[in-house]
Image 1 (cartoon, rainbow, N blue to C red):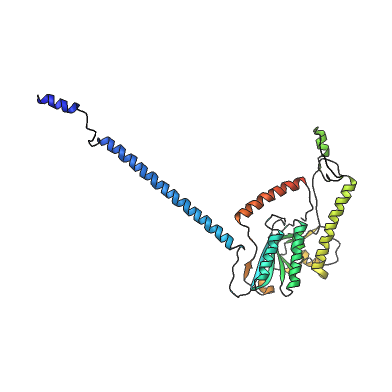
Image 2 (image 1 turned 120 degrees about the vertical axis):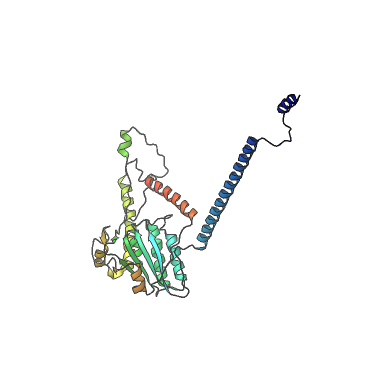
Length: 328
């Protein structure tokens, strides 16, 4: 009888409200632990992305508040304003007329500015952009005749860069700097014979007899070549006149000065293209008399920089198809 009761209790199914078996409890604990770990990971990533966003927001606010890179004021202490002209001088590039002129105007509006240095390191670029800056410097010199504006060359100041520097009171160089290249260039390629050999038919429709001038797939007529050469010569004469106005009788009477040749800084001193050897700090301290430097070069915001790079890439692609005059 007892044995029958024992067997009956063994075979009887467990009550629904009874405590789970040992393995069930372990499984439940593991599931709960995994859920807690996942929640912790989610919180950590959430905190990380919030901090990242705050850092981005702080950087954006700083860029809005500080439009001029490296700008540090020291109250009423006199300083030398520094403006960088770096790389190709073209619209949309880091060195463009609007940016350089913005820096110049900000520098002269600062009452603590005792003088301005244009820190030059450029192979040249657009004659239009260079002319804009040249005229702005001459306007400032008329408005503030006692405010010195000097150009200081590091590696190179050629063509359109020299166009700008010629407007300064003095040009300082390193003996190994490259300066000059007073000339204008317009280049391209011709594929007239190539498409004929490849059996390619050129289909071009224009309104205007010379609308397709310098098209690389059709021959250049003597009339068009003469016209383009006259255009380049005209720009070259404008460049020469600007240099003569800026440098005056400091220029030596040498027929090679305006031939497009380049010289070292040491040779440039002898030719009157530049004035003396000097760097940014020595000119600020010994020539202007204000050793402290304040950089007034406008710095683009991130999105502007990206859009300008895209625009510059498009411009480069366009210039590959349509040749324009350049000072370089």
